[in-house]
Length: 400
Length: 235
Image (cartoon, one colour):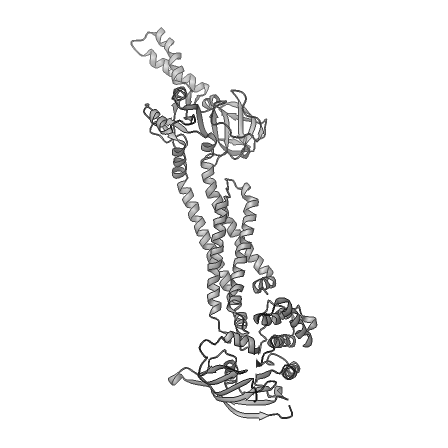
């Protein structure tokens, strides 16, 4: 006869309520683990989907994600010419915050070259961008339907495709436009600013004593064209040919003035060790605290349950019940409580993790590790109860 | 040669030492034969429960000998290596003042646990428990939890548990204290009947003289000593 199951059967509602409470707590622990993992996945989502071997950025910066980086777009041609480089594309990144339906609306805009690297990794609805201007692919999380229009920097962009689970390191959903459009959105001034800037330039040129008025008026549009160029990118990414020596190519580009070639690993380190390190530590610590709290709560529950049964245990001892049966009663209840609570937590988080505002990545190894920890906590907690039970004297069963 | 269920000689239990010494039981000496129904009477603190717990291997004696069903279980103290739980399982049955049924087990499971403690398989234990309970008039209460049983029914279930392994000695501590007079007398009559039927020695501690009618022997304790012993030859 299994005494643990009999006791649970008799006190079903109390046991279920306890398991439910613990299950919710374990669900929170699981979600913390998922958010912890999600931070990493989010931070590296664009990095991984781009799958570049090299990220060439502005010298002395750790761009394009962790710091601002501006480089001329045409450097891509020079990079393509390096032996061993199979593909190179310019990319533009920018955070955009506007209002939509009266609410703040944030997203991360990626500009990429059609047919180049760094575009949307998968289209879950609609189609990829097919023309050079005014088409946009958005992440499903932005909740914009296909065919809808999005106004950016004075132009309307039509949503032609949806992608999924693409977010920036800050957790904002990602949208994609062509590089030319992204450059226009990011770098091009509005008409008034252009007019002001040209007039200012013309005025400055006309004051130069070695230029005639005619020369100054001829030079103004030429210079304005140069300084107002939007052919700027935040990075140029490159993919190497099979067998190419990454270190060698990196070293070669590193010798060029004004550029810094970072490997995919370098970018990953910058993103995970720099940008999200504190958030990860915070979550990790919070998770550890929650586990300790769970352990303390389980211990207290098991101890209280044992205290409730001291007379029963004394009676069992008096009628000759072996210690292993009494140990089994406490240990099995503790383990069963842990197992059921874990199952409740797992089910709960399994059903809700998609509804969290940020990615919750439930990784098998994390869940298995947590399962092991819960089992250890239950065993540890039951030891407290078992110690108490073993000290109970059969004589305590006697008397009124 | 007479085979005794219980033999005690100069059994003594002293708590504390020096000025704090309390003699709870002093030089108790008697034998009980199988099937004999023995009452231990006396006021509170007279040593009757100490006697019971000493025979029941719950309290270790300070001096004296106890032999249960031919096995020496105390000689001054408990013999080294004596498996107290085994002796309690195999040779003793306990009945308590407040029944001490396991609250999360049904009546039949409360009896089964005693049998399973002795290695009886679950199926057989259930069948035997049902039979015992039916014999005690509890056939309609088999799957009831103790909380749903009356005081008399609870005590009969406790008796069934004590009897389950057919022990040589049944020790009952104030078994009628929580019952009304009628139920108390019914329980005592039942014990008397079972002592004969099972050939078990039954030792009942009580402070209620009205309950010991028909007992084979009645010991009266005072200040830890046997001050009176009566035999009921008609019993």
